[in-house]
Amino acid sequence: MSRSPSRAPLALAIPAIAGLAFLALPLAGLLIRAPWATLPQRLTEPGVLAALRLSLLTATLATAACLLLGVPLAWMLARVPFRGRRLVRALVTVPLVLPPVVGGVALLLVFGRRGLVGGWLDATFGFSLPFTTAGVVVAEAFVAMPFLVISVEGALRGADARYEEAAATLGASRWTAFRRVTLPLIGPGVAAGAVLCWARALGEFGATITFAGNFPGRTQTMPLAVYLALEQDLDAAIVLSLLLLVVSVAILAGLRDRWLGAT
Image (cartoon, rainbow, N blue to C red; front, top):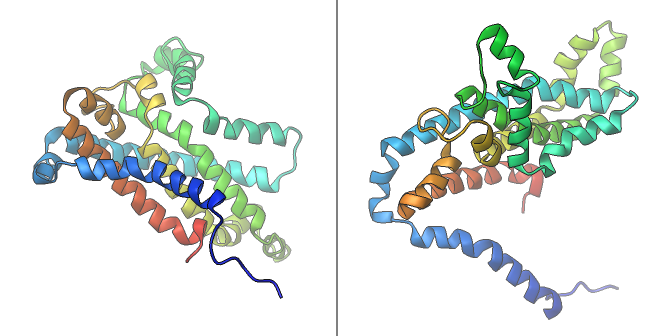
């Protein structure tokens, strides 16, 4: 009869505690150094509220764009066999490992006024994406979409395709089967992917500042406001960081049962 160990060996416990401290101490530093006495006043400052409103708006719009484009892309990767699927999947995941600043430069080369697509947009419609609120949405969607695609593709691969086949035998079209059968089956995966996508968009910094700039009220999101405040007012930077920390913790708590398992 095997007996499970009651305590971890010191060779594992010590590095584990050190790793936990390494991750937790910076967060504790935010809480300890926070200007709690002036926190309500600082949270209602116009600059903070403007950055928060812009962040919530652009992250939501970016997530909507990712849902519109990413769910069909995930469905193709999971359900449609085609030549080059591995290459397409690799391209989808590139923004996960690409430095965000490099992503911003790449967006400028494509959507800038002299870019591959941006030049045509400017000449035809007089419309330019860089350094606009729309540019913020594009930058956030670029870095956040892989989180949605990977989550939805995993949900599709885990869903039983026989339900879709049964719908097809009853006369349902591929679109009807997808809308009435597949989407309800993968609903939790889509929801989890959308939340992760939204959280990644909310915290995006590098691609946003490179492609959209840092203009208060127009492109200055919460991470950019933290960066600017860090050079001028440390307490303001801490308050903004606390707001983002609260959002991150709330998202992790909401996804706990799906990703970490209930304990």
